[in-house]
Length: 342
Ligand code: KG4
Ligand code: ZN
Image 1 (cartoon, helix red, strand yellow):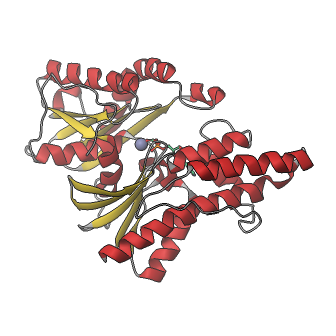
Image 2 (spheres, protein in one colour; image 1 turned 120 degrees about the horizontal axis):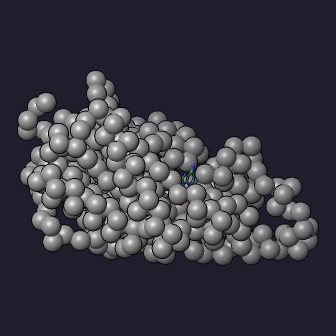
Image 3 (tube, rainbow, N blue to C red; image 1 turned 90 degrees about the vertical axis):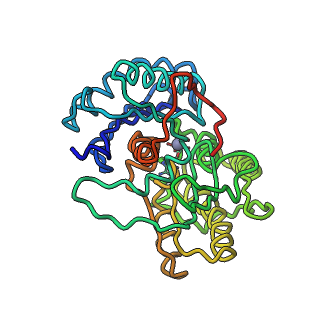
């Protein structure tokens, strides 16, 4: 082992995924995620159930991550955990676990901002992998269930939010519209799946208008709901008959909206390193369109591997590693911060 680069355990529990990851000398050795199916039937994440499921999952997930990495607890040189933003009860499970493990092993504790973790996922490499990574400064469009942000990343921890959603996040818009269509939570991946067979030009929705680099999705959600209700009045089987075209049309509207501001910010700042991050960056249409747009605009585009798009501890371990190199540690008084900012 290279003494100064450490072996860090990353822990993520901000929402409904319990995840643990091990990073050694800056290379990810394992990334395990326990998803919580319990929320599907409720149409969204139930905070109390999420925190209970984290309590059940955390020890087995950590043990499995250590085992897969071939690392024992005693070899760890740091514990990184998500401090926020996220659900208070969910975060507390990860924070408390990380604190007690760090205390018992007498090793440093590293707090990570979840949104910075999503962005720093672009630096994840496996052993013997030499992937092209973004160079600073780059723009990252971070799109998840709770956030939609355009971030200028000038260094690992020098990040500036240039624009964000004024109401619903893009993932939330996907999930709420999916709920209108009768899909279980989270509906975003199902819209993606059905849209593959559909015609995106079939139904037209007005693109939300906002100032500068900000977004707004709540009006689109209402427009969509009214549209479906009206069509169902005329034909009760409307959704069933037109499922694929509806999904393709609404997905395309969300993605065009996301890209309109991304293009503007990249042009205005004259930056050609463009990344996407967060759960919605798993969307196949978003990934394909970014690739095409990047070729047209001569951008270097960065699209995370699927396992590092939605919530995962690999990104927390990666961010933890950069903090570790800076010796940026926290004490046992640290606690969860549901509204943590950069
Ligand atoms: O980053 P993430 O796992 O959790 C948060 O921090 O919020 O993002 C979850 C969000 C959900 O809204 C989910 O529907 C969306 O990401 N999502 C997708 C896809 N995969 C996940 N949305 C559209 N298409 C997908 N393929
Ligand atoms: Zn997230």
